[in-house]
Image (cartoon, rainbow, N blue to C red; front, side, top):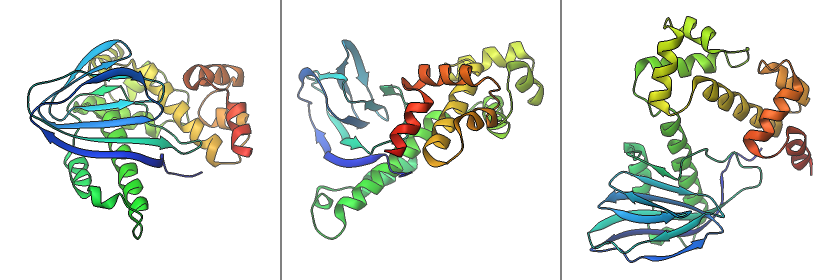
Length: 253
């Protein structure tokens, strides 16, 4: 499988202005990744209003209704519009993420410049590699956004036992916390229940195995602790809007 997310970088800008100019809400045909370095931007996304402040990030998928309002305060931001490769394992991110610009992301963004967006040497390839790095870094930050040591330990425990049937009671025993306390803490810190997180991790790995390996679908399900393939197929389709069988067919085309 191609490990790249980005197929083509359509647009890049690094902007510092005294006020931002708005535009009408329209459906976008590409991914929009925008980081606010200072100041604020005000967006309308699928009919909802969002204010992005310093260190916030916007991540919009194709088909999203996106607009921006005039804002009369100084702002600096970096924006990338891109298309994705076929079968890309795209980031499962929220449209607006707060305080996610890490030291590494800021360093990666600093490498970009308009002069890189040319046909000289390997400029295009360098930009795509940098943007892929940024996206993977953002995925890691978002996934492990909780700084709570109990939650981090729980996440690591889930990964260590990902090939087993997992439940709240089993994980809570492994991390030496009561099920009630762990359930409430995990939901508060991540916005997801522990069961939702376990299924997300298992299904993401299942998708990767379908795309990268020659394992039969039933064997993939069993390797992740799903003894009932029909149940696995049902929750997989609910998660990705496509069945495991159809993903496998697409890969083989």
